[in-house]
Image (tube, rainbow over all chains, first blue to last red; front, side, top):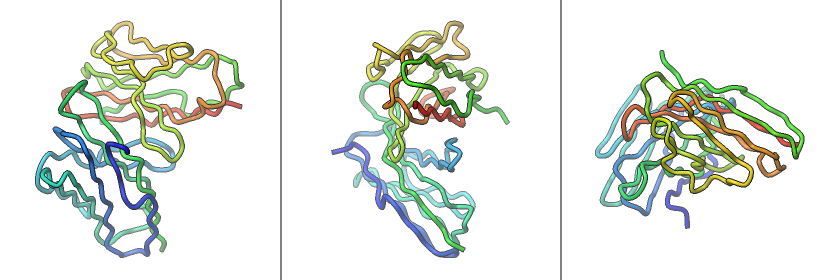
Length: 110
Length: 112
């Protein structure tokens, strides 16, 4: 079992819909990243959080440390939101490195 | 805005050939990471540098892969000889301080 699991793996929705992507992890972490990867390949960090909730524009990220779960929400989704969204966690134990989920491929149709 | 620079963006090479990727981290970032991302999967760490020293290369296939960061600034990742299974996106990231990370655009390698 992977240390970081995302769901769903693929998500297709219509423009304007409210989107939720989930991330569950099984290890102790110090922080969690939500990352966006467009077809060109480059990764952009959307959020880094260790507790509570963060909001940036139409994006909202929440984390529940006790339940080892985080969600990324997109309100009023738009075709330009189409990308792969990746959850990555910083482990408490061991080397300072990120462990990544497998990603969620989001497609927003006009 | 400062960014992590990688080159080339795309590389096609024949199997058994040598190939090299370059990464220039954001100025002042002491930590540099190389990740490999196979299509449909999340990135996996290959090697982590702190300045010019290797901190973690436990997942680096050392029989064919090598990485260096001689002056603690830019870094090179080399594969020799390339195999078909090495086709992937190679991502470089740098960090000024734990746990921040900034990613480059990646180098997409296709081995034919």
